Image 1: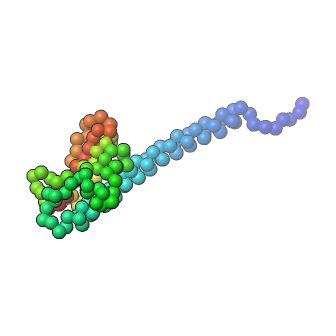
Image 2: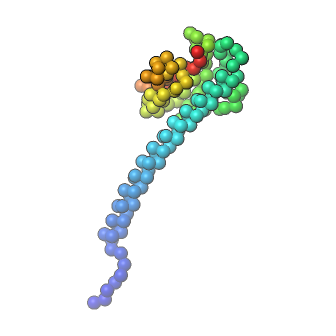
Image 3: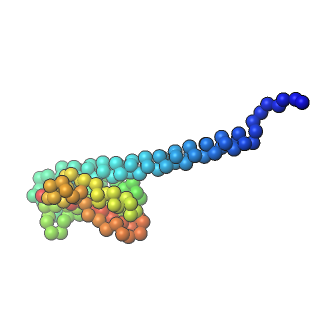
Length: 154
């Protein structure tokens, strides 16, 4: 009887099963990393918008002359957000010394994450002594239809 060398089918199936488990774990980690990156990107973009709006309107006592359709060109940013929606900037109708950043086009989980995030420079956060995140939003619409509003100013 001659001894043959090589791999058996069972060994090959075992290797493929192990590779499958590793691949599923890697996909989950990549998904989490992408979600975290988008949240970080939104945070950075909102901070940049707020800083630029304050710089542009710093000489005025209020934001009543702010126009969302032209402000993005003036600050050199796109109004598109990483979730495929848009950003909007508007004056708070009840207080012209405040402006509102709206983040549109969010899924429910993204909306909930942004509402609970601590927007430390926002009016809502400061008024609550840090007990509230400072953002409001209705996160019960269908995916891609939710929005979050954050108010800044005095």
